[in-house]
Length: 206
Image (cartoon, rainbow, N blue to C red; front, side, top):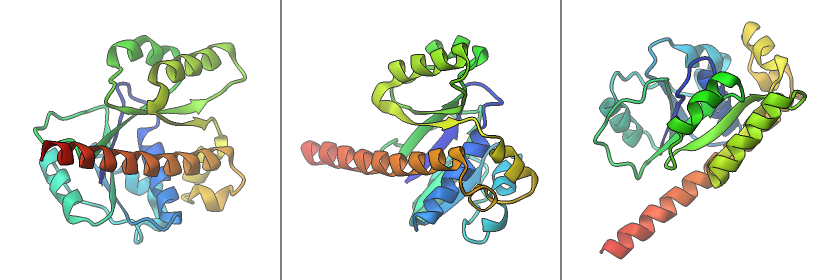
């Protein structure tokens, strides 16, 4: 299964979310690979000491990424940044996850960018203030069952990255760590649902 992480707006933490969910899946004993089509190598930087356990797929195009993910017998997580390349690849083995933050910039673009075929993760939620709280609720109401989860704002995420340590070792009690783990569990459920849905469609077609 290929999982594409992207956003319609920069600076929302796509690489951070993708890397930490990859690490959560690894702790769940899932076979995981990563790919970075942003050419910034941010995922490797976030993965850090776990690099040997999470292989990096060196690809340049969506077609190469899809083929590499098919050859890999596990879950491939790819960071696309703000670019969503056009591709003729069949979507039955692909999940799109859009990352957004409950801020004014994202909220201004979100209604136009919303895609019912995508799943969503809200990153850096801070419910202490009225606007982020209202924005988060707006997104939840709009995406409904397509919400993978919410990552709460937590300085431990940046502190762990600055010290080049995985979050679960640097701050085992981090609230964001718990949220990443919850998102990983929900992602696995979404993958199972996607596989079952396409299997039913194929059975009906035959």
